[in-house]
Amino acid sequence: MQSSDDLSEIIAATAGHPGPIGVFDSGYGGLTVLRSLIRELPEADFIYLGDNARAPYGNRSFDLVYRFTLQAVRYLFARGCQLVILACNTASAKALRSIQQRDLPALDPARRVLGVIRPTAEIIGGITRTGSIGLVGTPGTVASRSYDMELAKLHPGIRLYSKACPMWVPLVENLEADGPGADYFVRRDLQALMDMDRDIDTIILGCTHYPLLLDKIRQYVPPSVTVLPQGDIVARSLADYLHRHPEMDARITRGGTVEYITTEQPDKFSQLAAVFMGSPVEAVRHDLQ
Ligand code: DGL
Image (cartoon, rainbow, N blue to C red; front, side, top):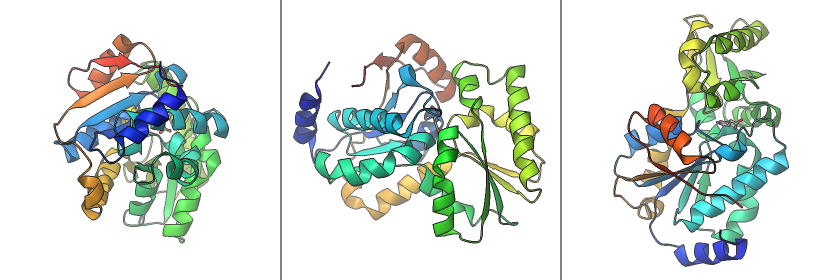
């Protein structure tokens, strides 16, 4: 295991050298984003890091989510990533701004850490017809009011109604997304959301685990409601970002490889990740500190 000082030295040594794109999530959910990223940027190299040992993050304090996410970013930087995507709404809501403003200047000001909330908020204006939007997310994401703030800046006319769904991530992480327990919680929470305003015509899946519940979610909202997973939105936004930032684009290696790292049991991760990805996965374990 490397000490924090070792990591800082390695980060300094890898500054400016091309590397893979880092993709981080508390567990499996970010794989829904990784899949879209690979489809959009098939030649790029990726490292996926899931902090399965400490997932879910959704009920954790601001301070802990920040601390865990910073450890993940530092590790991915030390692995040579010049660009890290927080493929996790909870980490994007609770840690991204602090990392961008407080830590990045000291770690390496040329590297970038990007989240999933801004790109999602950006496209909403072009989708809703009624101006009434629903958000489902973890308690942490909803309590942070990050979507409310982004939407107020970008589309001030839009009304946002949010529902925290604390049971949805545990259902996915425990392979119960297809079971009857999932029906109970998905129906209950979506009903509570739709009861807030009958004009809701778009629902943001503000947690990267939720696309695994997509069939059930569609079952319990009126067919006229657009359900919005984030993977493709984030992938298109990243492609656009790289187009506008050729200096970052040049610092991504392009061998078409994907490396999977988990902080828990690699066998279990590999098995489930293969289902998410639709191809074999061989994960290795790394403990964050
Ligand atoms: N997939 C994550 C998100 O988008 C986190 C879920 C969790 O760990 O609670 O919010």
